[in-house]
Each structure stands twice: as structure tokens, then as C-alpha cells.
Amino acid sequence: IDSKMTLYITVIVPLIVIGMSIIGKHLRRYGARTQEKMAELASVLQEGITGIRVVKGFNAEKLEASKFKKFADKYLHNIMKMYRVRRLAGPFNELIGAAIAACLLWFGGRKVILGVGPSPAEFMQYILTLFLMMQPIKAVSDKVNRIQQGLGAASRVFWLLDLKWVSAPKKGSIRIKDIKDGIKFEHVWFKYDESENYALKDLTFEIPAGSMVALVGHSGAGKSTTADILSRFYTPQKGKVLVDGIDLAEIEDSSWRALLGIVSQEVILFNDTVSANISYGDPNPDTKRIYEAAKAANALEFIEKLPQGFNTIIGERGLMLSGGERQRIAIARAIYRNPKLLILDEATSALDTRSEMLVQQAIDNLISGRTVLVIAHRLSTVLKADKIIVLEKGEKICEGNHEELYETCEQYREIYDLQFGKK
Ligand SMILES: Nc1ncnc2c1ncn2[C@@H]1O[C@H](COP(=O)(O)OP(=O)(O)O)[C@@H](O)[C@H]1O
Ligand SMILES: [Mg+2]
Image 1 (cartoon, helix red, strand yellow):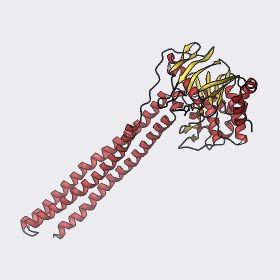
Image 2 (image 1 turned 60 degrees about the horizontal axis):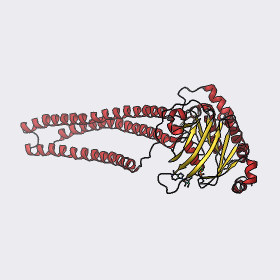
Image 3 (image 1 turned 90 degrees about the vertical axis):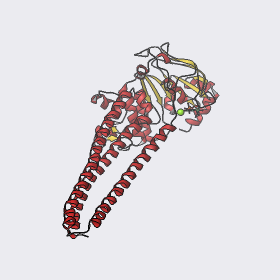
Image 4 (image 1 turned 120 degrees about the vertical axis):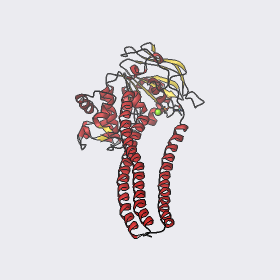
């Protein structure tokens, strides 16, 4: 309509576009960074949850909580920055809009009044069209963003709502520092909440301090359940576990866990350095002891070959280790901890002969001189055990050392031939 006015607009509009794109770039950058921080936060949380047995077993709840707080703070910091920019975008838009309006009114209006430009009606049309166009465009993009944010958040909420609560074991108050006499299972009955049958039936046995007791039995016999009850992940419905004569249920959680070392089949590595994974749960890691533990666990040879040695990041998001290497890190972790009571669930997965030998040596270094409950899948462990408990469908059917059981316990012979005979 008016060449000069359109010229102004063609000058001003690019300026706005540039301004907006600067803000937009910032927003995108913060957006991406916020996503990144969110992902970090989520992975810390996920590690903490999938590794909950390790976290609890190593008394590291506080540590994990502070790690979470650190990442949550970073996230908050970022999101605050993003909102600051985003909030700036609104007023910035308004300001620019108002400036354009003022310019248009000033130059255009003057022309209209002087009668050299378009007619008043045309001029109004021109301005209104311009502004009416801007609003919807802004609104649509805004709403699309909101809807996406909302959808993302909603799926999380539903996921959380679908989770079930697990009953936590009761809190004891007696603090203990050592295991002097040993551990006794006394007529322990245990049933999982969601199952019909008892997983453990009237289980009675002893682990004298300083000795190694091995559990053997077919899959589903109740071996892991027994280990989990001793770790205080579950509390028996009937019967008791006594530690030096004290009911385990009366013992304070963290004081009990401080005595425990748990090495489970499923090795949980955190997305952190080798050192941090070995000294996991220790707020003041000792470099020398980490080295010694790695050495005793036969892990030194491969750790020293890693790109940054002990400072190499391993775990789900870090460098991947082989099965045998993971197991040796887990064993080093237990050795570093120097536990009074070791609960060991030997891995069933076959390793190559060399790893098998290295892991076996590592386990030997770990168990010597400790009170140990081991779920034995290796013949050498079974042969070394002071006592073997044979479980079948939650019941103890035989008890004794290898020679005794091989003579007297038919089921033991059967398991022995099946599991170890071919080796
Ligand atoms: N979390 C669980 N919820 C319900 N039942 C379980 C759970 N864990 C194990 N069980 C059941 O308890 C019994 C003993 O299992 P488990 O102790 O894992 O045996 P094992 O370690 O000897 O293979 C099995 O019948 C198994 O199905
Ligand atoms: Mg098991």
C-alpha cells in the first residue's frame, strides 16, 4: 500500500527475527542442556533403583541421595536459566511489537493525516492484519510446546501411579559391631506377598563364625530367598534368624549392613570410575586399599590396561567390561569393604577357562577367613565348604560336608552329578 512503510517493516521485521532467533537459540541450547541434565538425573536415579540391593547392601542410601541432590541441583540451575530466557522472550516480543506499532502509527499515521498515504481505513486494515497475524502464530507454537511438555510429564506420572508399594521390613534398634558366635536360622518360614506357597519351610541351620556354609539345590529351591533374608531384604513370617543370639529383626538396619558384603550373580556397576565402583559406599575412599582390593580380586591386570586405569568410567553408560571382569570388580568391591559376613551368590554363567580360573582365585581370596554363606555353583566352592545345606522346594533335606553328603544324601548326589559331574 505504502512503499516507504513497507520498507520500514522490511527493515524492522528482520531485526525482530534476529532478536527472536538469538533468544530462540538460547532457549534451544538451554532446552537441550536441560534435557541432558534430566537424562543424567534419570540415569543416577535409575542406577540407584536397579542397584537398590547394592545401595542398601553397602549402606549407601545417604551417598546416593546426595549424588541425586547434586544432579537435581544442576538440573534446577539449568531450568531456572531456561525459564529466565523464556520469560525474557515474552516482554521482548511485546516490546518489539509495541515499537513497531509506534513506528507504524507515527510514520503511517502522519502520512494518513497529511493525506499523502493510504486512506485511514486502508491504514487500519494494514495494521490490524499485521497484528492479528502475529498473535495466532505465537499462540500455536506456544501451545504445541506446552502439549508436548504435558504429554511427557503425564506418561511419567502414569508410570509412577502403576508402581506397587513394597512393604519395608521393620526397623530394629540394636546396633551390633561384630559376629562372634555365628548365625542361626530357627524354623524360618517365608512366603512372598504375591505367592501362594511358602518359599522357605521350617528352615533351620547354623553358620558358625568364621566358617563357610554352602547352599545347593535346584533352581527355585529357595537359595536366593535364604540369602535375601540374611541380608534383611525380607523378614520371615514365622521363625527367626539369630545373630549371636540376637533376633535379626531387632538389629538396626545400617549396623547390620555395615557388617555385610554381598556379591550377587547380577553385578551392578555404577556409571562412575573403576575406583569409585570398588570403594562404593565409602565416603572417604582409600586409594591404596582400592589398589590392594583390585589386586586380590585379580582385577589389576585388566584395570591397568584400561585407557585411564583406575579413573576409567565404567558401567552402563561408560566402558563395557566382560562378564569375568565385571565379576572381579564386584569381588574387589567386597574385598575393599572387608565384611564380617559375606553373602555370595556365585554366577552360573559360564566363563571361558581363563576368566573362570581368575574369578575362582579372586573368590578364594575373598572368602578366606570370613563367615560366609555361599550359593554354590562351583565345585571347588562346594568341596571347600565346612557345611553344605541341600535345599529342595524350600526345605532343608540334607546337611553335612561333601564326603558325608555324597555317601548319605541321594538328592545331593543327583545335584552333584548334574551340576558338577561333567566338569
Ligand atoms: N520376588 C519373588 N516373588 C514371588 N516369588 C518369588 C520371588 N522370588 C522367588 N520366588 C519364588 O520363591 C521360590 C524360591 O526362589 P529362589 O529363592 O529364587 O530359588 P533359588 O535361588 O534356589 O533358585 C521359587 O518358587 C520362586 O518362584
Ligand atoms: Mg537364585
